[in-house]
Every structure is written in C-alpha cells, then in structure tokens.
Amino acid sequence: MWPYDKLAIIQTASILTENNPPNVANDGSPEWAVASLAYEAALPYAIEQKNWKFQTKVEVLTPLPDPPADPLYDTAFAKPYDLWHLVWIRMGDNNGQMDVPYVIVNNQIWLNRRDIIIGDGLIRAKFVYGPNDPTRDTPIFVTALQHFVMAGLYRGLNANHTEANRMWALAESMLQTAATRSDQEEGKRAIFISRQGLSRRMRRPLTSTTGRRF
Image (tube, rainbow, N blue to C red; front, side, top):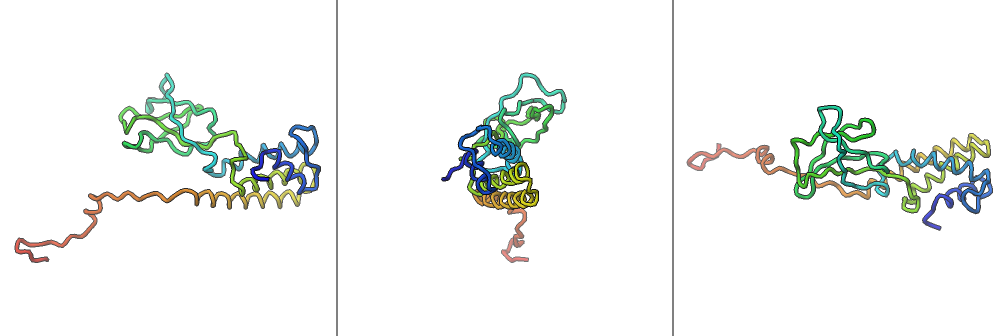
C-alpha cells in the first residue's frame, strides 16, 4: 500500500527476490541486515543524482561571526546541518534579488556582499536536504530505490551477480525516468525582456523632416 517506508521497501524487495521479508525493522534477520545496508547505500546515491522537488527547500543563512580567511570574501556561512547538495545562493526578496557567486571552503559557504545590497539583503540558499523520508518520494523514485535494494539482496544474500547487475541497471533507468517526471513538475521560467534592449535591436525606419522614409 502506498506510500512506502523503508521497511515496506525492504519487505517488497525481499519477496521479489524470493527471500523472507522481515516483519519488523531491525529484526536481526539476514534479509534485513543486507537490505538495510543496500538501502542506506543507494539512498544518498539516488538523491545526489537530481535536485528532487520532494527533497529541496530554501532557508535564510546566518552569517558566522568570523570573516573568511581569504580577503576576497567578506562573509562566511555555516552549511545547514541537513544540507546534502547546494542548488543556488541568492540575495534579496521580491523587491529585488540576484544570484550570488560563492565558494565552499572547510565546509563553509564564503561569498562577498560588501558592495551588494539587493532587496532585504538576506542570503538564501536552496538545497537538497536529508535525511530522506521515502513516504514523500514519488512512486517512480521509490520503485527505483526498491530495485537498488533488490540488487543488494541478489548480490549480498543470493550470490546472484547476474540478477544483481540487471536490477541495478533497471534501477538506474527508473531513476532517469523519475528525474524526467520531476523536471516536468517545474513551470517554465518567464523570459524577461528589456524594453530598452528590444528597442535597440529593432530596426526603426529613418524619417526626414518632411515625413519621407529613407
């Protein structure tokens, strides 16, 4: 029954690989031991493949008290504790915003904002976060994760490397399908057109003082 949690994913994967499904998590069975390892290894790998909509959020960053050691940057931020992968860093709000260049040094985010004040001046980050809650994942992503676990069971419990490789390949393919579906959830960006720039690019007819066009 949807949605699936970790236990349900492992139970289904165990049944489909002709193994005994664990009744509860951490039951001490070899099925749980192998499948849990496969799940925990596959999950961050799958999450890192894409900026999944179900696994991203935006937060305001708080500057650290000490500036960066590199004088080219004036402000340092600690990475959020649950950050897995940065998507973007921006300054400002609806009154004006811009993408801000940054570097990652010693697990800190360094940027230069001394000459930039846009909108409210706050620094926001969009990032992929963890840990993951599989009950919020899309069905295709969960199915891909299930096949990664099946690959682990075939390899670590059944010693069937042929099936393990086949399940892994299927999981990779499903992950790409899930990524395509995830991209379709995001609306197309509106294209900003500068009236001044458009005016410059348009060819206007030259008109003499008599009204005659050249």
